[in-house]
Length: 261
Image (cartoon, rainbow, N blue to C red; front, side, top):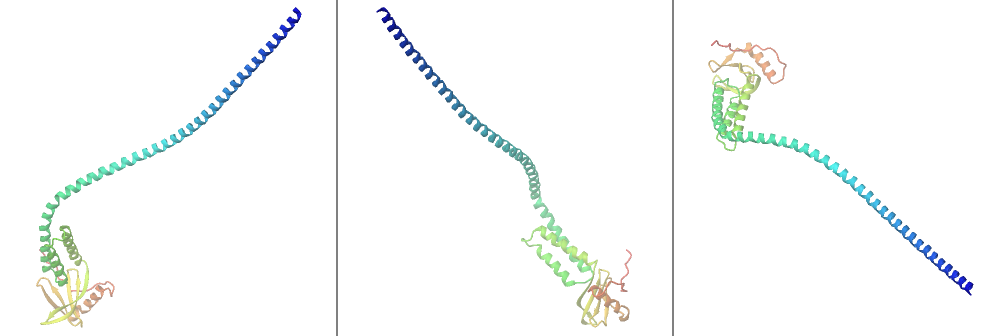
């Protein structure tokens, strides 16, 4: 009886021990699964973190590239603004000069108008005392200048320019030869003639039939007849030269000798 009970107890202990061992193994397996799951979770979290890090690194590189680009643009704008400021400063100085000039315009106009009037008067007197070539043309020019003196729609600067242009034309007359048609009273009869001018040193005429020639005498301010045979051919040749019908050549012409002062 005791042996039977002992066996029963041993068997029960063995069963109990087996049960306990199975429970321990099961518990250990559950613990391992939990550990593995935690590891996998950590790996997933690490992968997600790496993805975020990579994305942030890319964004950082893009931002750095944008920053460098913007800084280059800023440097360029600084250089441009510096140059532009210099231009603005120069323009401000120019504006001050213009403002000062505008302030002096009224004074200049008051001084210029009397000068222009004196210049027109002087030009008219000069033409009246000069050798009488192109009298109508020169008279019209002076009349035009004088008519503009009282015009309000013509600026003082334009009036002065016109007077200077007239003086320039008169100056050019003294350096050129010229041929033109006109008329001269000869023996009480108005005759058509060809005029030949050599600067201001000689003004001659020849009738269209080349039979009569004459020269202007500045001292007596009158026309003086010339001998037909002496200057007839020279005047004819001079007229052709002035009209560019013949080449330039030496001419024998009646030239008044300069007077000693």
